[in-house]
Image (cartoon, helix red, strand yellow):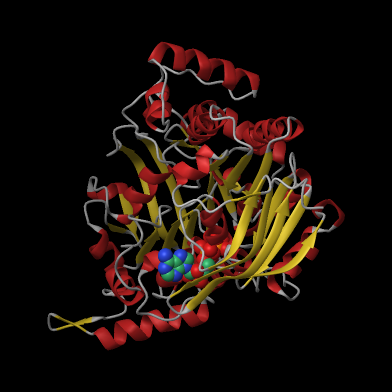
Length: 510
Ligand SMILES: Nc1ncnc2c1ncn2[C@@H]1O[C@H](COP(=O)(O)OP(=O)(O)OP(=O)(O)O)[C@@H](O)[C@H]1O
């Protein structure tokens, strides 16, 4: 039945240099349907939704919206037809208020007071309370996402596209978001939902379309499939769980942090307060916590982007707090920040150049003042092969990789430098289930070889799977690390809620 569909995509194709990103893709979305788009990293999900939202023009195929031809040349046209999108990366101005940000995204914004009133009404109605006068810079990641969603809802969309919306949310916020999406769907709004979190898809979505290498390979009711079956459809084969090889003996301490207090370099950042912990050879310390509680600052203070007094950070017992990133790399510490566009990678540079940027010291990619390009290229090639990075080759610009494939490349770049200390923020952010398992395995392997590892992550399951000791970062303070084994979700909840109290207790004990 064609008449009933809200959106019909027929035979859509898109080619990038060397890559068939979409090939003969067809799907339909009914009114009020929550439709999942599944696929490995680089399968073509973002390309397809960008076509639907008017950001990318397809090379072939056609689309119908409400039975009428639909070929948006720009997002403005898509929005005018009732198609809205919430991106993975927010596009908000931190110094402006919620209402000002919403106004900026609207074609015909009403006067500010009226808009503020509408924001209040819509946000309350959908269970996403927002104060229109607050500055976006003071909001948590979850609240920022609310701003983006409410901005879309004010346009009364018929189709709402969401690209990995839960990766920045706490479990409680995920619940609230799902309730909102279900309410929207019950009212007739259709939702196209991209996520790598298969359990969430099973809980939320009515239908799923699975892409593999640009093509539709399956369509199913996700509630009737197990997460493992969904993963197999995506990959085309069964997955192997991570294995912990014989646990390495806990060796001597390779990273020591004591009384580390630093202001944030960001206008709306979080200062670190009295952080102290140690990491031994062969050990993985998991640092949990909701984004915005000092994760970026902690990574920068460890990597050398923020410098302190020498004794605050010790690498292999040698003071390193006053040293910059290159000197810390030379001492054996590598770091992978969360923000892969801009912070971790230079998007317009090739993969070879990006491999060179952080690999030059430990991989010896400079000789007598000259860059050894051939060796740098070989390093990039090795990462691409070993970490299953789907790309035509090392001369491609970082920007051209799908989000998950760039993540695999950047993690590989750090792990392949024979590090003694590894610091990673959100190692598997935006990475599909199979690749996430491979990255966790690579981290476990490095630890088994004797590296000390700090993994900062918002994914509790991930931390419980790989870390030996566990701590929570809350408003810039770190709880005392404790053994992961035997830790229950209730205890973690307490650590997350009562981090300050625990910190006081730990100082009193110390
Ligand atoms: N602007 C571009 N230039 C060149 N190639 C591109 C561009 N955008 C995407 N690609 C390629 O098209 C393919 C599909 O990418 P796409 O971003 O659609 O995948 P995805 O399924 O969204 O992946 P992920 O889950 O990692 O976000 C990838 O191989 C990617 O490298």
